[in-house]
Amino acid sequence: MSYQHQYVDGTRIHFPVGKVVCIGRNYAEHAKELNNPVPTEPLLFIKPGSCVVPLQGGFKIPTDRGSVHYEAEIAVLLGKPLSARPSEEEVLDAISGFAPALDLTLRDVQAKLKEKGLPWEIAKSFDGACVIAPFVSASTFADLTDIDIRLTINGEVRQDGNSNLMLNPIVPMIQHMAANFALQAGDVIMTGTPAGVGPLNPGDELVLELPGTSSFSGNVL
Ligand code: ZN
Image (cartoon, rainbow, N blue to C red; front, top):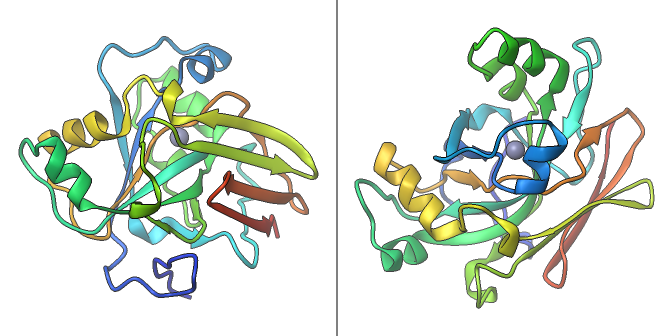
């Protein structure tokens, strides 16, 4: 089954699914809950486009590699390429939409890699490690420093954040990413997770929202 980006009205997006560029520890309260220092420079990592799956209809998680943590994040879809040092206007012009998404993490595997100072790929890039709901058109959002993100599991709100809590706000974050490597149409930016991460279990019922603009549910199969 191949994933294709989609808007909330069901329209398919013609961009290919590119890479998923992620930022770690972008909310101070989340860095604190995992006993991580707040980085002085943005901490970036990349998931391959092949690990992206849709939320609707449910999604699978690995069951034999320790705990799988959810991280609810505001995902940004790029509709135009960005490279070198794009201006704020160029970044805003390149953003096609926003969606609630999950950056899934094999937390026990990641802890072992971190202990040894090794890269995180196998903890962050397994098949199905990025779960994305449909995108809401960027024109819906007047202020990128005021976007809510919420995750409810089995009826209980677990994560409830807002982009105003980001250590690196969306536009400067994307400028920093583009200064390090080229971004392309179809790439997705995962903007970090607020506090409240925890393990997922088969059977969990999730509601993932950008409150006020989009709300989608999906089960862990
Ligand atoms: Zn994350």
